Length: 444
Image (cartoon, rainbow, N blue to C red; front, side, top):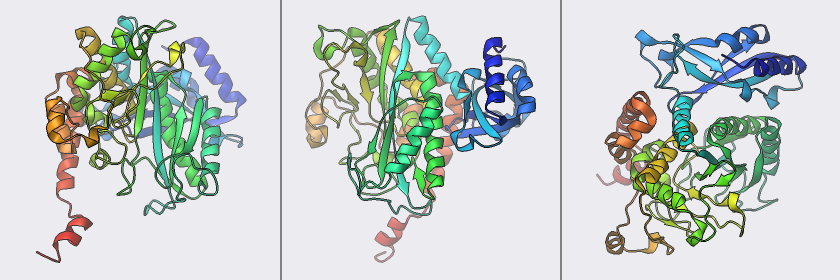
């Protein structure tokens, strides 16, 4: 049942903003944004009863014989779409939770998967906060990878010709109530990053979905193409989604201990140990595409090895240096994920892995401050340094045996994801690439 005060706020806001259409948003298993539009005349009923749709047509949702679903809008997510505002007929959006016709929550809804893990954390007294850094490229069209500029990290004009695109994107995000901390050019040509302000995981997952759409909409206004593909250009850095994360108990950061090494509390150390312990299992979620594994290779600032450190950016987990006395800023940064993921599932499995470490009181090993890429294979083995899966197939096989992943995602999402990724890998294996033709055709 929708809170009456929230419903009244949405209805009044819609009238004040001359809203004609309200788009109801949700995601499928892979994190693809779905939408159904309702007119203002239907808004009152939609807030009470939701909107029905055919779940069998949504990836990972339901079989044909159990296809009826209801998208129930969350009034707290009501926002005007900036590229449709100011007109005679404005368009708004609300994120939805998915239910079955009998009123029960649908276990295949990624938002439900995250909510379930957040409740687990709440039952232990924690609130989960995240701050992801989503990187992306601007290209002149979707037909190729011709860049807009040849700038590098933090470059400004004239190399960074996308400053206006980033500015308009930031303005659009903030008009939708999504606070932005920074925006800048990234390392690769035509690669950019806009960092959202740290907040609770459910709000941030909604914000990530909005962010990806806003970036693409603004790019279209400039007749260019934006992509979150993990590795669109060979021999250049790929797109990462470094996830800063911490647990709070009330107003206090449970990761902070002023007297401990790195100012990391025992809770933080066990949480990190859980992430490291389950890193291989959750990689299918954090890096879900064949192309994701073209990024996780040596030489391009993407982690391969399951290690942690404070200053070393080759590690899977980095501990950003927070100002002395800045308790709230104490956090860890998980560096493997890419921005083509499903953020609801990524935040859910990271939290599940960390909580498992806390509940089992897992000890944290020593940091690896030297560049892991420069260590020899023998030394890495002697030091027990493991490596992330090197391909989608390896990630699938690792995930398929994971009890933690099945528990975190639930049987429905777990089995749907594994089945979908096996199909993707089989499709990929059937392809004959340009590389193979150039390499083998002239000599075989």
